Amino acid sequence: ELKVEQNPLFLSMQEGKNYTIYCNYSTTSDRLYWYRQDPGKSLESLFVLLSNGAVKQEGRLMASLDTKARLSTLHITAAVHDLSATYFCAVEDRGSTLGRLYFGRGTQLTVWP
Amino acid sequence: DAGITQSPRHKVTETGTPVTLRCHQTENHRYMYWYRQDPGHGLRLIHYSYGVKDTDKGEVSDGYSVSRSKTEDFLLTLESATSSQTSVYFCAISETGQGFSTDTQYFGPGTRLTVL
Image 1 (cartoon, rainbow over the protein chains, first blue to last red):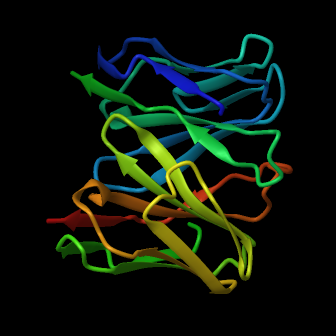
Image 2: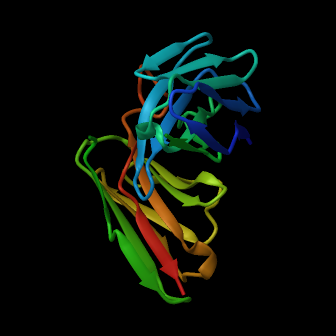
C-alpha cells in the first residue's frame, strides 16, 4: 500500500514569511495532487503534477514534483492570512487502473499578522 | 465548480441503525468515490465505482456497502451504524481513472455523520 507523509502537520507562520510543506511517498508514482480545505468545507484542487520536474505556480503557492526522490513540495511565498487552511497532498497509485489516490494527513497552516 | 451534491449534509443517528448517504453528480463522470475524513488520518477511501453497477472496495470498507444503479448517483450504506463510523464523508468524482491529462478528483460538500 502506498504511504504518504506530510511535514509539518501544523504550521504557524507570520504574514510575509516563506515556508515549504513537504510530501513524501513510498512507492513509484509520477502523479501528485495538492488540495486545500477550509474549516468545515470541502476539498479544492490546487495543483496537478503529472511528471518528474513538474512545477506549477498560482499566486503565492508553488508546487513541484521530484519523482526520483518521491517528494513534492508546496512552497509559500510572502504568506497572507487568506492562505490559512489545511493542505493535503495525494499520490496516485499508478499500479491501479482506477487511478486511486492516497492522501497525506494534511498540513494545518495558520498565518498570523 | 463540479456539480456534486451530497445528502443529507448532517445526520445524527443511533448505534445499530441503518444509514444511507447519497452522492449525486451532474457531470456524467464515470468514476465516483466515497471517502471518510477523520482527524489525524487525512482522507481514506471506502469504496469506489468505475461505472454503473461496477464497484470495488477501498482501504476502509468494512461495515459499508455501496450501490450505483445510475451514472449520476452513488449510495453509501452503513448497514448497522457504530460509533466508530462517526466521521465526515466526502464523495468525489473524476472523468477518468488513470489521471489522463489534467484529470483530478472533484469533491462534494461532505456529510457530517454522528453515531450515538
